[in-house]
Amino acid sequence: MRNIVGLLAIALSATSLMGQQLPKPKTTLQQDLDTMMVWFAGEFDNFLQVWLEKRDSVKPELIHEHIHSIFAPVEVPAFGKNVFYVKQYMDGDPKKIYRQRLYHFSIDAAEKAIRLDIYSFPVDSLYYDAHLQPEKLRSLTPNQLINTPGCAVFWKRNGDHFIGYMKPKACHFVSKRTGKRIYITDSLKLTPQEIWIRDEAEDEDGNYVFGHKAKIPHKLKRVKYYTGWMVVQNPLQQNQYFTMRNLRLHNQGDKVRFVTEKGEPTKYWLELSEVVYGKDLNVLKLAIYEDGKPEAIAYTWGTPDAKRLGLNMRTLQAGVTLENYK
Image (tube, rainbow, N blue to C red):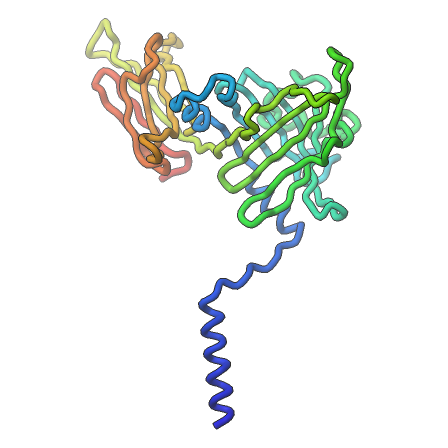
């Protein structure tokens, strides 16, 4: 009888535990690094953040810059594993590059964190879009690049995201313009679909140098690429249409001008963007714009995870399909 009672107690205890959420086992730094390398690779853009701020009439001085970040894994043997080419540009224009770097991630056992060392190029123009021409990077060594001591970023996993930070007052330089020492700090957050970046700087007297004045990070979303096409009717011959194929746009506000088969630019643009209708309805919007008109002259929309979108105005037609979708 005692055995039966004991077995019953064990069974009831096991049933009770099954109803509880058991803590997840802790991951090792190597496991965290492996996960982070997957999450970090890709392209990110804060178009939606800027779009919402403008829609909601945020004060101009508090509207974030529109930035696009490319984090491309590359092979540079002298650095070892976990190396990325980084390109960041403004206003959706790949030519408006404001930062270009080489990133190297490693495990820092003393800090119990993942360490990011940041290297800049002595001549930026020699390495533009080096992720598309990796041979430019392959023979580089750390001694050929610029690394500022104290400016490493440390990352630690916190549940479903990683937090990045710099050590206080560790990253600094002397301004050539003012002669004062400038202190830089970085605060970051990384998830599988977003990276938040808050860069700030102040001088030795605590005066503002750069950074968002409300201390709100740039919130960049991972972009997804679509292939597309567009058709425009010839205004002089209604039975003739110009077709533009093999377009490539990402879903965070990417915009492409329609050009005829002869290379002649037209007044029409195709844009793909994730926007919000009302308070919280996120949609994927495919729109056609015309030079001189701030509002779209035609658009259609679907869910943010839509695989295909298309619109037909007879004289203007367009369609996009998620890359690698069959």
